[in-house]
Amino acid sequence: MVNLSLIKQSNSRIDESSAPRVAVFVGGTAGIGMLTLAEIAGLKIGFKAYAVGRKESEQSFKNFLGELHQAHTNANVVWVEGQVSLLSEVKRVYTREGLDVSHALTFYSRICFVENLLPLLRASESARVVSIHSGGLESERRLNTNDLNLENPGAFGGIATQGHMGIMGTLTLERLAEAKENQSIVFIHSYPGIVRTGNLFRGWKEGSWGSWMAAIFFDPILMLVAYSFKESAERHLYQVTSGTFGGKRGPILPGIVGRTTRGEQAGGLFLVNYKCDTVLNEKELAKLRVTAQEIVWRKAHQIISPYV
Image (cartoon, rainbow, N blue to C red; front, side, top):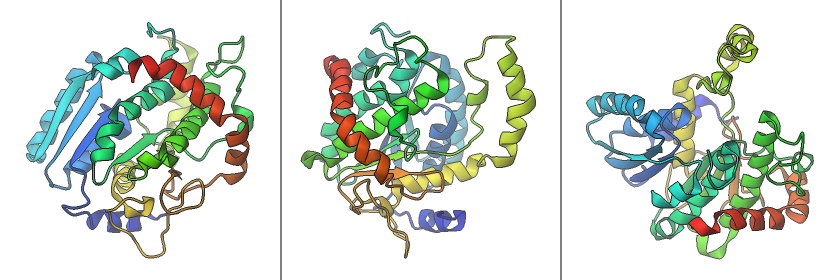
């Protein structure tokens, strides 16, 4: 585990050369994305960020921006309205394309955004892609290659969908990261651990037993084990800036070495767990590369190609 003291040490070494200069936060108008945005602004090094979110999120996010600009006048944050569960909206910046919203948000829109931004990322001197979801939790048995969109009866479910789409994300990001033309870009798929961002209370019908159980039983447990907002923000700032994960710039602490899914120090996908350690997950990924990677790649591009 990379202790918080080491995270702080690395973050304290961020300077003009290693700080993010331009960032795009997709769906980061609340939760971990917003926390990380505030942490970057706290560096007090001029940067510009584009925050993409739904119209329903605009007012609350602009309230946050007002407070942010008061504290950090050098932060230039641009609001971009976009329904990122719609792939057509991705190119312009439930669902008419026939995709389940959760599938679009956890996989298809992410890959669509990355592929549309690749020309700019390749032109950057220190580009980095960070997808926060379930990096390192891949398992061959949790991916059904015969039903990638979980359309068969009984296949769809909250936990099943998150795990399934997370694996698809890893396999696709790994292929992008290993492409010769993308070697200058750092790709990270991370798992944030438990952070009380409010997701526990989303998705329940009004008055349902689920929301009641969440409030009475589950949330008090999360209070005991979850990362604080501040620590989560610091750990994600570390992922955004640390040279441990390859790239040409960024602080590197003695004795901490990041490894891609192939065991290399650069040129591939970094899976980062909630402790900020890199995870190879060799056994499961070796199987998935043979049985699923090409199938997932073809499916992803079948869906997103009209919007890239």
